[in-house]
Length: 69
Image 1 (cartoon, rainbow, N blue to C red):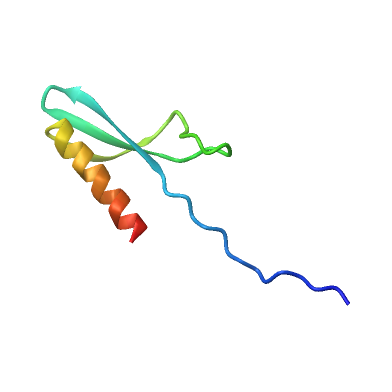
Image 2: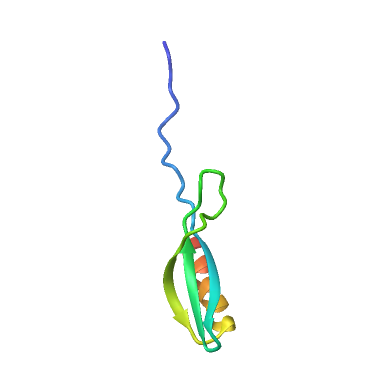
């Protein structure tokens, strides 16, 4: 008789985030999907706007913390 391993759902891989200055007081946060090799794809989608780099990085940290909870 042959046995098979129980089906285990794949774990979802969290997206990568980056931020870029669009103007001195405008920072855009991008969400990038990951490729087959685990590296971020070169294109991304703008998901949040901030007034400073610190605010953008804090928002990214909050997203990472929320997804791991």
